[in-house]
Image (tube, rainbow, N blue to C red; front, side):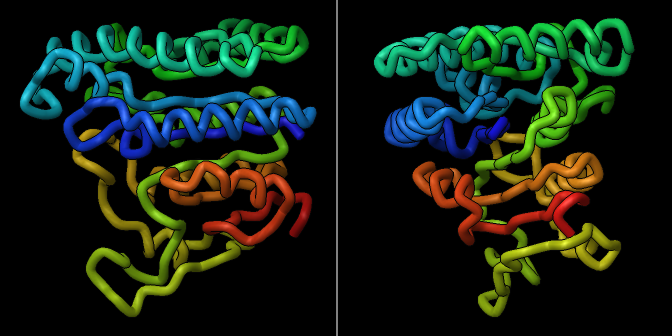
Length: 261
């Protein structure tokens, strides 16, 4: 299969902004193994600002735009250095692609992105994609052309005609209520269609270092499901669940693509 995996800041970094070594090493190992099994893997990775916060020893996620962009520039280096080093241990070559809103909204640039991704996959590379936060303000609060990496991962899945999108988050999946506040909340294993009732279950933003929340994940589900692609939300603390997800087994919440309903 052609699979897009999106990993959030909460999985990649501790609350301090420093790298969560255990999570990242396990994620790289599983992605490498799935690639060895013949799957085409694309990673959409958040975390540039969060890791820049840690690298620059800032007290928390900055509020002003120049510092956010500076943190992103520093953190993106840290991210790609880490990925390149870890994937190289399993003999896989990574490629970095940084996108801004215009890269996907302009038809000519969108085709260029699509061609680059397709060729990288043909060459056996593993593309690692993030929004270009050092120069773009889309994700970090001014313009919502893309919005955040949940939406970006859905756009990437559409561009490459992926069969599966997996969002690794800080939550097990979609619940009947907020599990952090309601102990009676139940995990919803399968969603056949993102209806207004389903959308009403979405809460606010996610972790302190990230920007996403359940609402952005449901938006991503609607985008990819319409293109016939399944989407799964699961907890990023357990990258090994990707094996079960790829095999179609229950893990997190699976949103069914239009072709399989």
